[in-house]
Length: 95
Image (tube, rainbow, N blue to C red; front, side, top):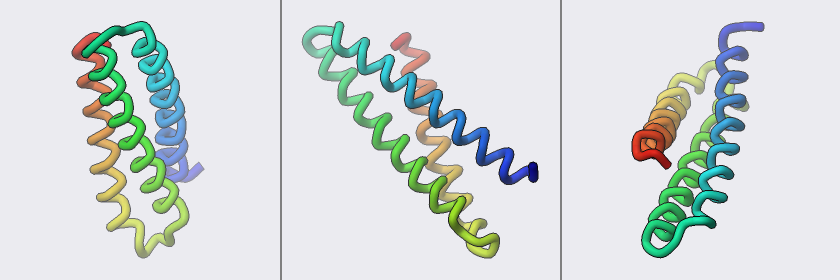
């Protein structure tokens, strides 16, 4: 497997892991009350939006030819970092 395909496969796997984490957060939100529940749901919605953006960028990157991938790689990396940071923030806050 070439390095690009291996990297894309790792990203696909991590997206699935994050989807599972979002499901866990959603279940946890169901058990929360009041403002905590509202805050958690908003943050979950934010994670879902960021994950969808990464998914769209990854799909576009995979479909692109090698001549257009450089620009797409930047968008993908930025979206990935944003999503990764959001998950890290949730982890640091003990969610």
